[in-house]
Length: 281
Image 1 (cartoon, one colour):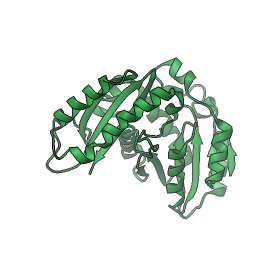
Image 2 (cartoon, helix red, strand yellow):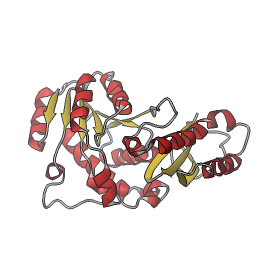
Image 3 (cartoon, one colour):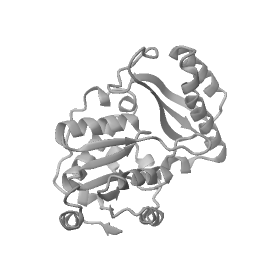
């Protein structure tokens, strides 16, 4: 596995090492890798292209300096996992390789996607995501990018970025990988105490019950019961729980008769903020 740290070396590697017929499948990450990330690499490998991952903690998408400082950094473990997964190369740039001095941060028209849910609670977050991926996509020119669907709204932001600026780019969403407890795998889970982890798992389990119960009760009834349940968990504070159309994220008041929907939640377990969703087929 080739380890690349400079933009000029990335451009050279791209021209020399990629499968010119099929191109590159790109898996962007911020490190602190876990089995969920490895499932993305596995999916990428099945595409038959050269697989490139990246590890870059993008400061523009953090709303609080403390959250950025607390983000786990495990480069040795990350590289070991990527190599074991047979990833072809990894790009690990410093900040100035992605945001060279003198280049202004751009504004992207993301419409209502950055005004609701995560956009409302984390202002500027999706502009930060769009800025870093715009730069990485321009340099790498991937044929495909593989992203996890746990960050469902972010996935839709990347789709919008692709529609506007990279129309030939295939954007693939991979199902959320979960721990045995039901909790969605996340780098933030490392910050949870044993009790906080257990209670966060209880929240995820209630979300998973939707596959069974959504046909027998309204969304508002389920939401009310869900919030009452969360109030019994001392570590848990729910920020939002919302039902939306899958393709537009337009808010819904009840399960649709036709089409697909997604339930999105954000909550704190102790001091750690987590997001999750459940996609209704």
